[in-house]
Length: 145
Image (cartoon, rainbow, N blue to C red; front, side, top):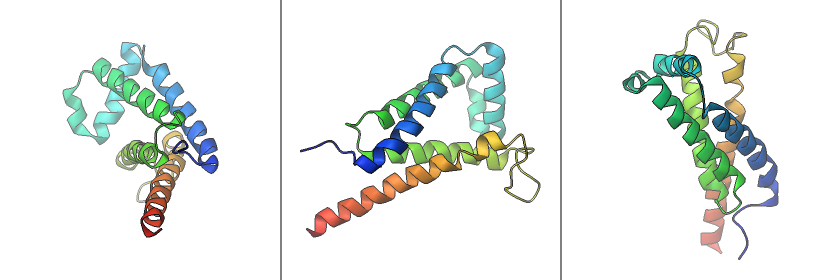
């Protein structure tokens, strides 16, 4: 029995996994000012996060990004499972993009220059949903055979 990763999945897993892992590693030792900025942006979109202290929020965010990055890079993690995590993470980022004024034009999802950095995360959502969809198709095909 081989690893639960197809050859075609390796490039998008490595690209997204390395990107997210690096992002998480960079947040591990965020200073208070950086933590407050990230926390403020997140709480603007998701008010329940306001219950967390900014430094605690950033430590949890960093841990989540590191975990997701490693899951995408580890070939023992099934692609569909890693894809579900990626889709959820990207969905959260895109939700923040949609809920934050100034990141997109009024009445539109077209990004402003300030929003491009988050709007581009739509590619992670697409990859994650593709991984999940392919996993479901493969599972269904296995049941039929």
